[in-house]
Length: 195
Image 1 (cartoon, rainbow, N blue to C red):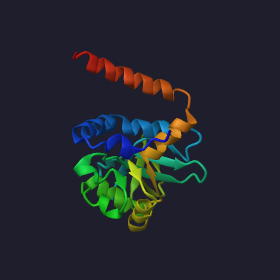
Image 2: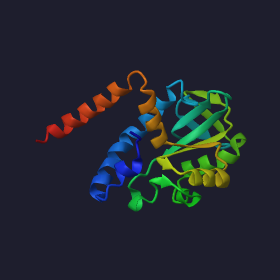
Image 3: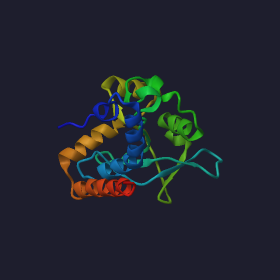
């Protein structure tokens, strides 16, 4: 059975979908980390990057530093997994306009770095790393949406959390089922305490 974010997070019940989207927000980055730890994944995670513009003493910390396993190229990566937000208009990436509402300084720096990685100093786990560009990670994507944002913003790649979830289901790496079982148990313990 394939994991489909539209079926999970767009049920026709917005209250339910909003709740599940927020709950998944706690877990989404962990899913990406777990995927990166699998040898089958094309990228490994080198840790959270802090990105410094020239002359900046305090940079912006983003989500991931991804190293492509085959090429050795390194990319700053940011996750945007907005599942129910604004009536599901960002659930699945279909066009480049969907990035336009992100106007904070960290994301604007991320967008500029995609085309101009040489303009920034990047540190991951306390060590300076030379980056080759940027990778966007979206909740779910279409081929057209992926191509549109690559063309407009110059990303080296666009990945989806939905695809990663499907990979993990197929690969079934050691510890994955146990991790999901543990999270389910903790959630049940929380809600059972209110009954």
